Length: 463
Image (tube, rainbow, N blue to C red; front, side, top):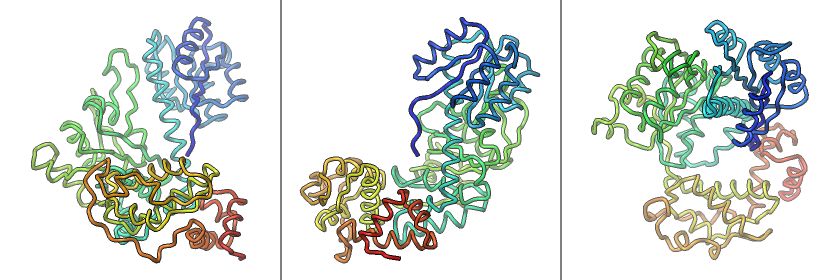
């Protein structure tokens, strides 16, 4: 999914000095800023242009901030709205949140506060946008179609995903970098009973425990200085959806304890809070570590491991599914051909043998990066040959991301070498899934109808 790199924000305030300050601040942070000095002018701009975030004062001449918020949700429901005021009360804060505001900013504020809050609002907007995109992909069968491979190991993974999708119990994805932990977690979510709700990822690694706790559970009103409202953590954001904890092994002991309590009781307490809040979310998690070993070392909770292990799905490294490598190479080359309009013909047998024997410690991600890099260097209409491969692949040296190569089975001599020969079964499968409808078949392959017609011609398919 491609997302525009330029962020757009509408700032509404009746004080010119505030507008000037916020316009300069946000502009320097990479935002494309439009301003309005009244609620009525703000509505006019909402009707004329699209925005990612709306930052509006509560007290405005004419249409006030609450009414502008409600109007924004009707005109541009995908835009997140942040309210600001110097007259903060709990009642107005609650009213704003009920009307759909992302959060609340109290005057006077620091520039860092503004950037932090509108940045989080933008992140949620992207998250919702991504979920809508993935829902459409799921309905069209595209997510399952993106699982390239026929090996027994990858079929076992798909079988486990289907089996556990509607169980509504925790699932743990175990695999190394590049094996598709987040990808398969998304597939499971979009084939579950919660598919119409949000899929919310949380990265446990690379952040301190306090930051992780606040990000995950939120914090209570008044927990940090002059905060009027609770900070909305990721658990409330997931709202009846799925929470995916990436790298759960990196969570600290306090976070592990709270996560276990969430799993057992379906309740949580915000940081600094005193009461329990209900949380109807499904928990998915991933790790590249052996949690049993971490328990033995005393760095991971026995109870949390026991809660996660029954739903474990082990994602195989690419070296354990070498029969899928030619299919993956073709898949990524085909994608590159469509994106760059620079078709390559395929791979020579010598190149396929070397690529299939290489250990790919970075797994599918490393393989994809390799195809992207080599495609950008090759001339149109040529074949990737052994001479195009780097020495570590051609001569069996160490993978740049891991161990030296282990002996892998040779690629079958029956494997076709050219893109044209590999395209025919793919086109026929797409037509079968689309029940003969060429437009739907083209959509399944993520190409337009003229490009699909060209595939039909090359594959000599007339019906």
